[in-house]
Image (cartoon, one colour):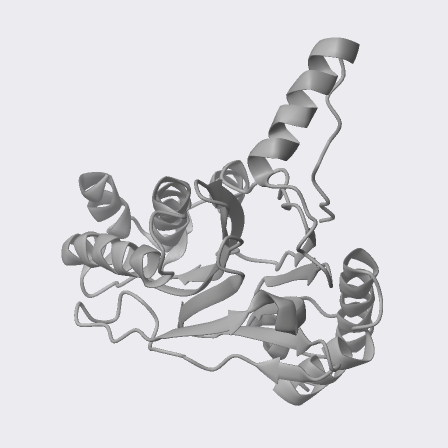
Amino acid sequence: MSQLLSEISHTPADEVKLDFVRQIQSTFGPEKCYAWPGARVAVKRIASVGFGGDFHAVTHGPNEQHSIVVGTVSGPGLVAALAKAVISGAIHKFSPADRSPIGLLVSLSDLLGRLNADLSPRAVTCSVFHGLIDCAKGTLGYCMAGRVRPYVRTRKGVLQELSVESPALGRSTDVKLRVGSLKVNSIERLLIHTEGLCEACSATGESYGPTQSRQILTDTAVLPVDRQLAAVVEAVHTHVGAISTLTDDVTLFAAAFAEETTNIPRVDAVNDLFKWYGESSGFRPDSSVFLG
């Protein structure tokens, strides 16, 4: 892979076909995001005119752990597309791997360091948020790097930005990462968006900006997660206008948490129920809630 990336990095820009880059990036996007008992999940993505480096994933591990990853890759054309493919594969391999959300970001940082060793000075960077739901402990642990904006809406209706930011991965091998933690029963909703939302520009060059982005998330927070993200997408399209185009992808992620989780069945119990239902009726219901 490193040899391939090194060869492509020296390819003239006019030889790199944009449609080919888009084919690569679409190949590694998840078709569905599966929620877990006690949560509803929705994802929306607005594609830009160029290469889109945004990615997201919800993965499930042992011991009632669920991993939420939202991020974006930046770099030169096809190199970044292939790096995104490698990162997407690593996310599904390494998360959730332990009881701390920092482990995945350390693995991604090491991976990008190896790729950039062959690409320097054309470095690939990655901004990413990793949230680790531990149902057994009732906690949301989180770690992030670069320009991704996560928020939580508390049970009291207050929208709070999670701020444990570190520089984007790939810029240095000596990355400083910090971990935060919240009680799941204190959270009504987790909301994450990539920086493309703030950078969406109107025909007059006015960016949507962090203040307006936060306001639309606040104003729509009473809606179900799918309708909330649809409302945000509509607001972005209205701001950009019919004659303008986005220069960066916008990815929106929302997870709503049930207020009472004490009576929610364990994941293995739900899977056993689906298995029994499938064997008896020949049909397995879809447990996911996905819009995108």
